[in-house]
Length: 70
Image 1 (tube, helix red, strand yellow):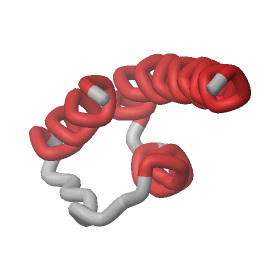
Image 2: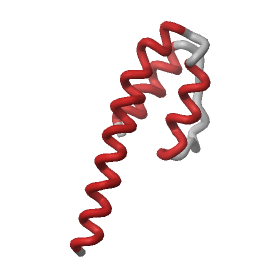
Image 3: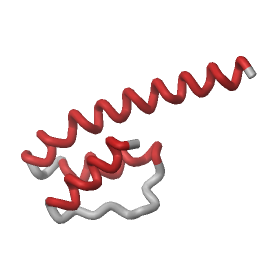
């Protein structure tokens, strides 16, 4: 997802690099603890992380519906 790359890019600007192998479902759980101590990062990234979670939930629901219909 583009939001994932946006979050990674913003973290990189602040000197935080994520492992390449962070799985989609665990991305939020890896990033939030890293940013909670920095008010600027938290302010910038929490809305992106929240939007990413909602989009991913919608994707999973649509994927389930397509699989049921197939």
